[in-house]
Length: 357
Image (tube, one colour):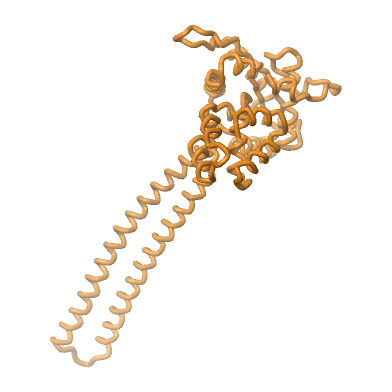
C-alpha cells in the first residue's frame, strides 16, 4: 500500500478506508489496529505515517503493535492501568498470606503454651528435670516464633514498599491514560468523564457549562506551513487555554484542532466573558518562528457555549455547543456564540464547511 493509495482512499469514508487497509495488510480488525490506522489516515504525525507506509503490504501484527506503543502510548493507558491494578492485587495477596502465616505461627505458639500449662496443672509433683524439659520446649518455641515474626515483619515491609511503588506507577499511568500526548492537557477520554460529571447532581447541572473552541482555517495553516507547524500552534493554543483557565475549568483536546472546557459553578454571563477573553488572548498572541521570523498568524478561534441545564445529557450538551460553535464559523469566525442566543430557525449544520479548512 502506497501513500498515494491512502490519499485517494482518504476521500472516502474513513471506516471503509481502514477496513480496506486492514484487509490489504491481512491483519485482524482489532480495536488497537483501528485506532492506529485512524491516526495514520487522519492524524498529523508525518513520522508515524512514514513508518507505517514503509512497512508495505506485509506488516505483521507485531510491527503494528510496535508503532502503537511508540506513537500512541496514551491510547494504551487503560491497558497499562489494568496491569498495574493486577500487580497491586498480587502484592495485597502476598501481604495477606504473610499475615496469615504470622497468625498461624502465633496460634501454634499459643497451643504449645496451653499444652505446657495443662501438663503442669495435671501433675502432683514437678521435678527439676521436667521443668528443664518444659523450659527447653517453650524457649525453642519462643525463639522460633520470634524469628518467624521478624522474617514476616521484614517481608511485609518489603511488600508494602513494592505495593507503594506500584500504586505510584498506577497514578502515573492513570494520568497518562487521560492526557493528550501532543498538548499534555486532557484527552477525549478524560473529557467524556468530566462532561458526564456535569450531570452527576442537580447542583452540577444547574451551574455547569461546556465551552468548545476550534482553531479557524487550520487546514490552511497545515497546507501552507506544514504539519509540524500546525502541531506547534495546537500546543501553543492549548497552553494559552490551560494557563488562562487554571483551576476554573477542565481543559481538554477533543480532537484535531478542537478544544473543550468543562466549567462548574459559573453563570452563563461569566462563562461568556471567559470565552471572549480566551478568544481575544489567542487573537492577540503572535505565532512566529523566532529564528526565521516567519509569522504563522493571525491565529483565531471560533467558540460555542451552552449551560448544562439547557441539555438533557452529555451527548445533547455537546451537540448544542457544537452547533453554537458552528454558528460562530458561518457568521464570520473569530467569535463566541451562546446556544441560548441562537434563533430557532438556525441553518442546519454542514460539517464540511469548516471541517475541511
